[in-house]
Each structure stands twice: as C-alpha cells, then as structure tokens.
Image (cartoon, rainbow, N blue to C red; front, side, top):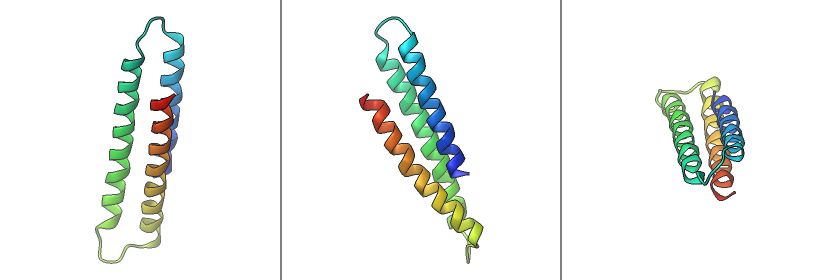
Length: 87
C-alpha cells in the first residue's frame, strides 16, 4: 500500500507540473504550495501505515513487507518532492 501511495503521489506531481505549464501568469507559488500539500498528505499516509504495522507483539511477514514498502515509498516521495520544488 505504501508503493500505491507513492504512485499516486507521482501522478499528482505530474499533473501539477502539467497544470503549471498550461496556466497563464506567474502562479508558481500556488503550484509549489499544492505540491507541498500533496507531499505532506502522502507522507502522513505512509506514516500511518508504518505505525499500524509496527504495533504488535510479533509482526508477521506481510506486516514487515508493508513497513518496508512504506519506508521506501517515503524516501521516494521525498525525492520526488525535492525535484518538484526545485524545478
């Protein structure tokens, strides 16, 4: 599920970049704010998944895989957000 969140974040940033390129005027700050908001929501969702999988006596393999996917998705989301904010 973490990787699905990462894919949705990627699609949202791609849509934001496309909308920014199509609009007339200097509204870059608005699109950066939208990208930051989308990124924070995606990171919060990954954090919820991680918190849910970490609480338990002995996490099973699917829980460990969900935690690993959530952590790797969080890294990818931060990496993509950096590119969206700089570019």
